Length: 153
Length: 108
Image 1 (tube, chains in turn brown, orange):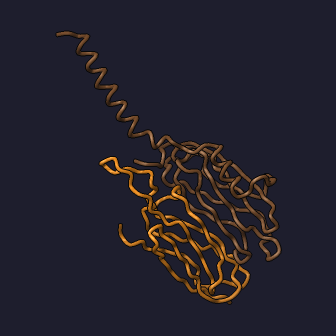
Image 2 (image 1 turned 90 degrees about the vertical axis):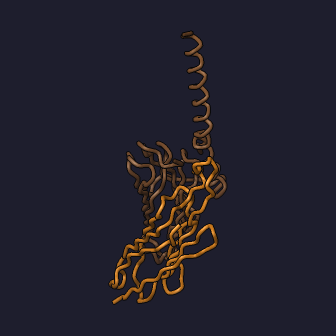
């Protein structure tokens, strides 16, 4: 038996299979990046000054299951008619699309705190921006390490 | 897909000025538009893209959801009790449907 021929055939089969696998996986790896998040922020608040602080962004440091990752935000504010948090936007820089959620508060909320659950495809940064009723902006960022991704499949 | 069923947890009563937490959940696939079926065809996106909570007809809280929100989306937020009345929650689906649920609150 011709060893070389046999091996090359195997190699050819393997590379074919790899190519097919890569093609199948390719769309999954067309992920967002920091720039896409920055672009999304610019769409809403181009050129505006943002400060750190006021926001407590609560996400797990390590998420074992990327399909269901709790995320909560809590923004310091008196929540009166004159001074309240209008909106909080959340993005992620390693998902197929950067958007996660936007929360819209009113003074009737009493406090600017809300929680949901998100999918994360891989380890990535969560970025949020809070817009106050007077137009001031605050931002916060946190990394979540994802053990099993929550996209596709 | 089975009909989305909302589940909402609102306290029956609250003291005036008390901060209550509202928790909501609705059964929904939240198909992200990223997945492929066994034939390799992309499964079209179908998610709930908006959640709105009103109290006595006035919007209290709303959320926009992107495909990155988990299946059976959960949302919690707060409400400062001021008067008795009724909450109305609505969820807007990509397919144009709106699912709603209501809950009464007594404020003493």
